[in-house]
Length: 347
Image (cartoon, rainbow, N blue to C red; front, side):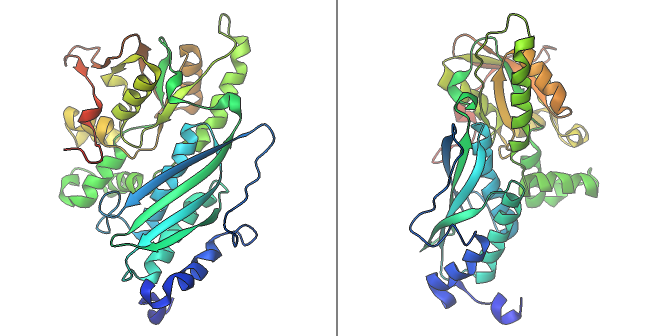
């Protein structure tokens, strides 16, 4: 890219000029009309999710390159599809921009989205661009799912195991290292890079769905297991505590979360205090792991198949209280609430 092109601003080429630039990121046979037409397979349900990211709320130029901002935006939406049990079909992108934004920044943003989406054969199929006083990015993602395999927050039942598909707190740790590099003096370069990458390039856990359904296909071999099983779940983009609380509220149940069963990055042991590590895991957010509730027999098999980082972290109980419990009794039980985590417009 020559210097003249890289210095161009959005206002220099206008809406149509920018749209022309960005259309090369989309399949030519899909775009060009007022809406995209996506064919789904017979016996499949269409799943749609939308996520909005605002500069200096969800991403910052101080810590996030345009490519990473694009990747994280795409990953957030793919993670929402994974949390529903769905496979992605495509996304649309709504972009609000000040006229002074450089064209090259926007192209790099789309490049990051494309890099994430290509892993899952997911195209950008359209969108919209408007003038805005602040950069905003609104993505709508479309997916398909077999109706019998839809994962809902409201499906948890008393006795279910609570499973997480990976470590928590890594993204928050990566953000802290970007904002305050001096905090990582005890970490080597490899450890720092891993935590920062967890923040800048999170991985939506679409990969775990085939494993989950393979485990469920084997349910007929397990004695005394009810024939129809539902999975409750969501992703942990707003923190592990938030995910469990949201599932319990939707399902009308409570939970006990075992403090020492929560999988953390190994580097936390010689870097953070126990309280800091737990804070990052429960409330740090943006880890994009799945939090699933299912019968213990299936949960154990699921964890065994996924391997390191996956864990049963608690169980669903009657009532409505969500407790953080320490089986070693070093710490008293703690009642968790949504007010303890991040909330838009919260005080």
